[in-house]
Length: 215
Image (cartoon, rainbow, N blue to C red; front, side):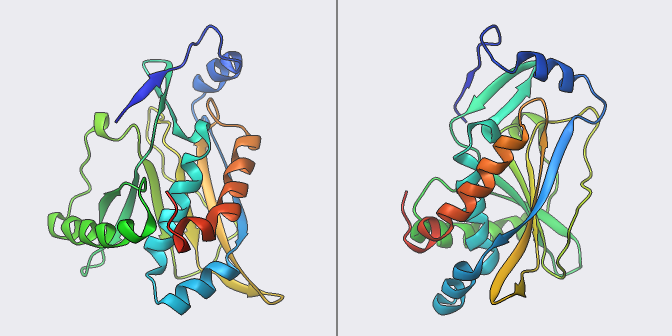
């Protein structure tokens, strides 16, 4: 995947980056209840697969925030032009495998491509990934059985810099459907303002991205 190196000498968060990059647990994250009322309505009306439809919206929203496309490599920051998602796919035996998807296409093209990719992933049934192939990925998972107000994610040692995004079961509240969406990021790259940009991007673009299929 194509990327560029940031100029660390002119990088305005250089001191913040160096500080947080030296911590044993350099992550920060939030869980926010996102309004998915219109999204749920369209999914039901058009009988679309919920997970893949929302995964597309999540990927598009994350890619609109440059800091979520940044990764740490050799103590420097690189920024990818586009980041794919890697999500968990349930297997019949109760385990799961990984499936990687590219969201840089119209939704009408994404959906059949994603369905095929999931079936291929199920047949390969693997959670093995090469480190050099994972830098640009957004790690995606879902907990569709219940809603939640917080989430603890497993993270590697040493720390990586891939955002981790998880959503739970949506619920009704005062006539609206809300769904918890959790994101965990490396604080050397991402601040609270960047997380706010992600959530705004998700709520603002959610219907445009998948129902109209705009690139």
